[in-house]
Image (cartoon, rainbow, N blue to C red):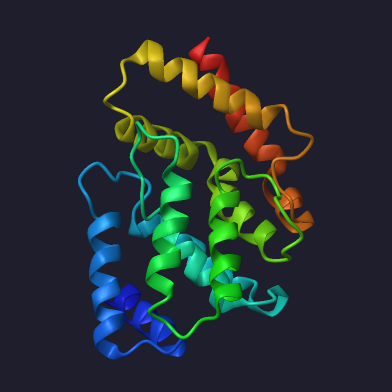
Length: 208
């Protein structure tokens, strides 16, 4: 946690935030991601995505903006809502105006966040495919890791009885399996595509 706090302070201050403002924004982020019921969409998830930015820094057009998108992409997360991404993008717009970013930069972040709703490319921003693939990399993890992820997601949706959860989950699984490719980046397709399809197909069969 201390490392993430320092990483956030460094990021926010590199964008012009005062130490006080950076700390204030951190406390809000920590409150959201540390809320009760956040079994997967928590700070561990954010840390995983940020590590992936480090692995691809030289390929990214703007690692700073992508890192901000990662921090805010799941800041609003309520299992019963369908507008979490839109609300997260709106909150990012408001908070990032406290940093020394242009409106154009803020909108890049907002649009990257909005793309995580469908995990489809909405524009030609070169860094959006990285965010989408980083976010979906869990689908291509080994079966034990994927099973743990499934359990965490089910706990986040515990307000729904099995018959309703099954309906929504099957729809999501079929959505991804019906795409020509789950991942956008060639490197992620090579690394995760086959494993992800196997994981998704096995889960789908379990729900039938």
